[in-house]
Amino acid sequence: NGTHSMASVQSLTASVHQRLANALSAALPEAADADPLLRRSDRADYQANGILALAKKAKANPRELATRVVARIESGDLLKDVEVSGPGFLNVTITDRAITENLAARYADPDGRLGVPYAENAGTTVIDYAQPNVAKEMHVGHLRSAVIGDAVVQILEFTGETVVRRHHIGDWGTQFGMLIQYLIEHPHELDHEGGEVSGEEAMSNLNRLYKASRALFDSDEEFKTRARRRVVDLQAGDPETLALWQKFVDESKIYFYSVFDKLDMEIRDPDVVGESGYNDMLEETCRLLEESGVAVDSEGALCVFFDDIKGPDGNPVPLIVRKSDGGYGYAATDLSAIRDRVFNLKADTLLYVVDARQSLHFKMVFETARRAGWLNDDTTAEQLAFGTVLGKDGKPFKTREGETVRLVDLLDEAIDRATAVVREKAEKVGLTEEEIAENGRYVGIGAVKYADLSTSAVRDYKFDLDQMVSLNGDTSVYLQYAYARIQSILRKAGEARPAAHPELDLAPAERALGLHLDQFGELLLEVARGHEPHKLAAYLYQLASHLTTFYDQCPVLKAETPEQVENRLFLVDLTARTLQRGMALLGIRTPERL
Ligand code: ARG
Image: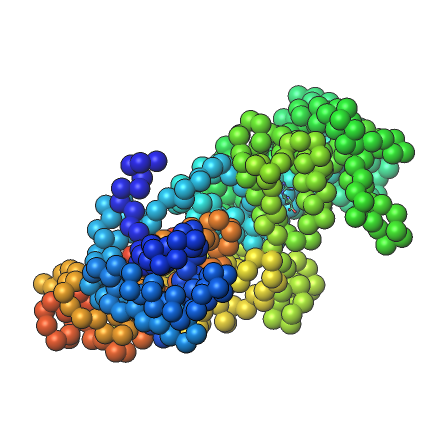
């Protein structure tokens, strides 16, 4: 997209890389497409390590080749110093002017994108995330899927990918026979005469119905029979039965939306396409698999077998697409969803943000879809598997009574803790009660999200609220304070406004901060490509650390000259915008006063 690239800013790294590559191919024509292997370095700004291997290949002396490259490099305003070091490395230092000018271009980007380019090969991704189950409580597993999925959505969209969201909620299955039958026999249980119900009330209604119907199901054989017959009616599409089923779905959605709202996350109704949404496709999916020979009959069930998947007894474990009683399960639905996502939604990438404990299921489902020709090298599927949330004791997170922790309780506790932290400083900052409450929510929810996003998704992590709301260390509140502190400086600046002055020399801490800011765009593209939000979190934490060092060494409002004050205001303002943008992509707010 031509209009897109207008405001995008080439990174300093890319510019240096280009000049090096040009000089390299001038010095050694056969190295025309070779990578000089440029890295950020402590010795200089960058170090290029690629010449060694190239010289070896060309049977040339590496130091001599390096010297020839240096002689041919075009320095212009960009390069201050290029020096051969060691056996044939190049140390590259760029000019202060180039740093400031590059940052100024990012700062001036009218799109508010900070010069970040769009991805070159953007396509269409369908992402399956935030998929709780109807008539059941949400737990920490659903939290992870929602938080990771939402971050990946934001990041992909920012880089120009077309993203279709799918919330594959568990809204189908035999348990609905029992629930619906109970509701028929106890009508008005889900009527809301007094108007709207809260999410909490909706969930407690569902819990009550679930428990009551379960008790009846387990104790009353005749009810059990009626409940089983009800499942058949549901599957046959009987209108009365479907209408009652819909009541359960709607009641659950009230609850889901209240939790997503608490999570400060936008979930749109048309994107909620649960298991039931694929009912019409199930039969055809089975027929296609059977006709192509991908699935075969095994003791009356329709199954797909895999050479490398065997149970503990050594017998193959198949993927069961249709059970011997004719019922369809989780696999048939997921296979149908793949067809929908590939052929109707035109996806080239399918992502599933789902617990690692379901990895075998997805491995089999994806392999089946490949054999059927629905997936291939250009249309791929990937499970973004996430690990388990552990308690402080390192065991799967449970209440003291050994029950799964309700997500709402956990979020409320995080907000309470965060509010206490915010309150401690509130007087100094001059916050109203309302602002304390709002910041408490942003800090608390941010803490939960950041803890989840700052380690790579597949790893388990410990849910430790004390650590999460700590002001020191790799936490969201540390980043939020970094942002708020900059806003406070900008407010105190009075007449002085941020302005770039490329003619000024930069202090080491300014250069380090500036070079890190320069990496934002490339980092984001990398994060989007690999679906790895934790790398964005790490980048932002490093950014805040660079800022801390900068404050230690470089006074802003008390800098020596008015130009230096302006230039430093510009640097911190760009840092704040980068923090704000990066945090927003992770779904985390940055309050102006904290
Ligand atoms: N509802 C499921 C659960 O709570 C997750 C659904 C995952 N998505 C899918 N397409 N199977 O575990």
